[in-house]
Image 1 (tube, protein in one colour):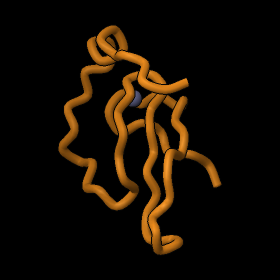
Image 2 (cartoon, rainbow, N blue to C red; image 1 turned 30 degrees about the vertical axis):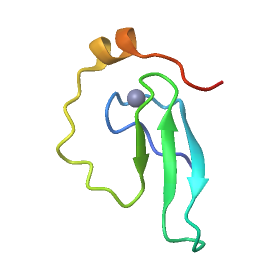
Image 3 (tube, protein in one colour; image 1 turned 90 degrees about the horizontal axis):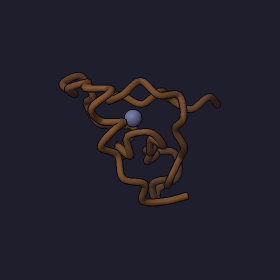
Image 4 (cartoon, rainbow, N blue to C red; image 1 turned 45 degrees about the vertical axis):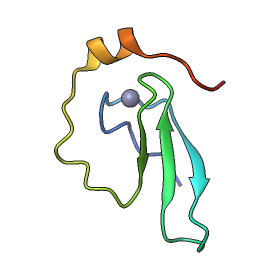
Amino acid sequence: MALPACPRCDSKKTRKLADSPVKGKWEIYGCDECNYVWRSTEDLGGIDKRVEYLKQKAVRVWD
Ligand SMILES: [Zn+2]
């Protein structure tokens, strides 16, 4: 299954970080570029997309 694009910066460099304890309920994804982390069941419609700002300010917390 393809990874979702980042809902905050539209990056395709996302990864799955975790699965729900009950299999198939939800997944947690993270963005490599702005370090946003979200759950697959969240409502992501209200996110403010400030792409360049977020990429400049991102602090890498994992590799
Ligand atoms: Zn992002």
